[in-house]
Length: 268
Ligand SMILES: Nc1ncnc2c1ncn2[C@@H]1O[C@H](COP(=O)(O)OP(=O)(O)OP(=O)(O)O)[C@@H](O)[C@H]1O
Ligand SMILES: [Mg+2]
Image 1 (cartoon, rainbow, N blue to C red):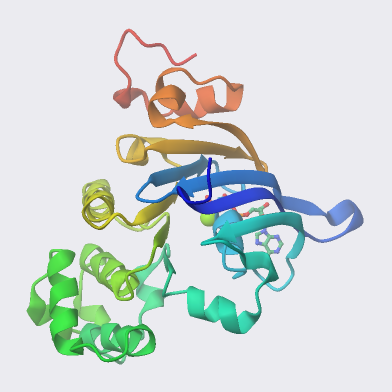
Image 2 (cartoon, rainbow, N blue to C red):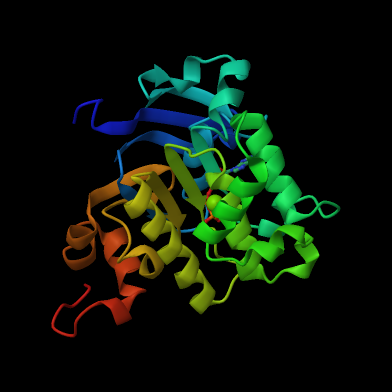
């Protein structure tokens, strides 16, 4: 695949914790790509290294973590070689994260509108911020009046939408959604992920969706990487992985989402 087509190319990325007997290879020679406008899913059980892979993209990893090799090419640059100052510019402006807990991502004492405006101030100087806040809330299907609301005055689903609005505030090239929905009920989860897929279709943004529940992303992702114990054990188009999983672990994961499979297609 060419670099022009791919916005992101991760190659042989390794990130370890601890040493000697205590060493954990949280990310173990992981490679994946995301093309422009593509929605890619990283799927795997808890602890398989999904979040650490995602955080490695902009070196947002915990202090105790060590990079042990590999590269993260984003827009032609190896992120692992950039200075903190350059990384800060990319975080939030070209790569935006949507984290698991919306409540902890907002400051409780400021209104949502104020917080989105702050993101705009930082990354997009010289625009009409009030108008842009209104536009962003509209994009995520929220009424504009919520700009004046405080985080605790919103439902979990509304807050999640605000987070997407905030992530979109700087029109990132890549949106990383790390299980954006675990705290929400299934209906809301679907709504939010549909919204992300809809946005990526409209704007051509690339999306990296991270989940342990393949059922949730099965009809949204173009391609899937399956992770187990820090390694990518299988990759393919969503269709391939869903209907013809090769690896035993993938088969088990797929068996956990039987409702998506037609009856004539056994999972094991
Ligand atoms: N601060 C840390 N110190 C030591 N080990 C860590 C630390 N953070 C993560 N790890 C280890 O790294 C591995 C990968 O963790 P990671 O958070 O990427 O998993 P995950 O696939 O995102 O899981 P989940 O679905 O539960 O979010 C795990 O074995 C975890 O214990
Ligand atoms: Mg995680």
